[in-house]
Amino acid sequence: MSVVTLEHVTKRFYQNIDGARSYVTPIDDISMKIHEGEVLAILGPSGCGKSTFLRLIAGLETPDKGEILFDNIPLDQIEIKDRGIGMVFQEGALMPHWEGWRTVGFFLTLRQREDEVPARVHRVSEVTGIGLEKLLAKKPRHLSGGERQRVGIARALARDPRVFLFDEPFSNLDAKIRSQSRVELKRLLQEFPVTSVYVTHDQIEAIALADRIGVMRDGKIEQVDTYHDLYHNPVNLFVGTFISTPLMNTFEGEVVDGLWQGTNFGGYRLRSDLDTGTRVTLGIRPEFMVLGPEGVGATVEHVTMFLPERYKLLAVRGNREHWEVTAPLDYPVEAGDTIHCTADSAGLLFFDTKTGRRIG
Image 1 (tube, rainbow, N blue to C red):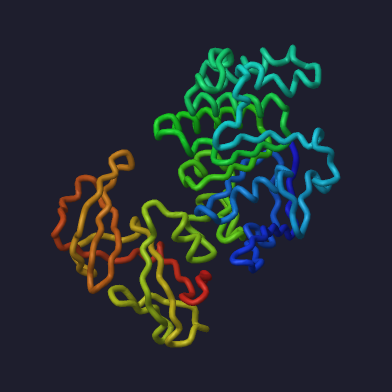
Image 2: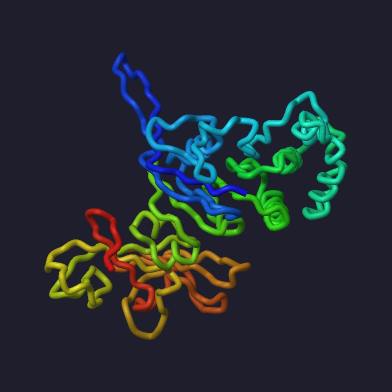
């Protein structure tokens, strides 16, 4: 296993538009360390630079600035055959004319270690419980999307990787197969601990697989932390609203004599150094909105049931603002009803409206 370090890494792609040369910067001055044996998920919206981040670590792209190191050795000073990178792509990227056993064993065969293939495949099959051996006699065209990805993962593991890279490997699978594949991969990563980077736009996937999550936006890593800390202690409004299921409620307001005041809610103490009139956004997650006989009145617009999670989500409207509230499944409420709610002070998050930065 390796420690992967990025030091002020920037990647630009140049483009010509109507004869004028310009560039985009999918990776913008990123510095971070991926610890030995950990699984780091990179989470962010489409186009934020996630796949380019992964391709740089894989050595498929070269930084324009900065440096990537494996165990403090610059990546470009390590021969490709010695880097020990196993990569799983969105589509599996299997050789179309090879049976699965040949794909999985290719790396070991090149090193005259093909006798290790059966034992490795058997162990992967045993850990995941998917009967991998049955898939290896087939060519990719005879495999489902989930089966192709399983063969792709087995191929990567057969390389004895120092670093394991995943580029949204389950994004094209249906919900049931995707959920099952996550469980199988989690078992494999526990059985074969390898420093891993997992790129995804799916929060559930990131939470299920990763030790830490890096939230990315416009080529920058906004915050790297555990899911718990990202959820409860976001550094800015983007992280707070992105790491959120259901979505975090936001309310516009301002400082009035040291207190936050908005349209519906207000009177919450803020830092003493904030001037009256400073624009501040309040963030509060639906589970911190407390239903009761008193509080702010609002009309329920619709009710969404979350049966596995054992709650219902109320979308409400009051005084030109909209927000959401969680309620127990047996709470008696329907669309059109009037409810009253208050904000639990334990869940209040304040952000500078102009910059989005968290206000402590």
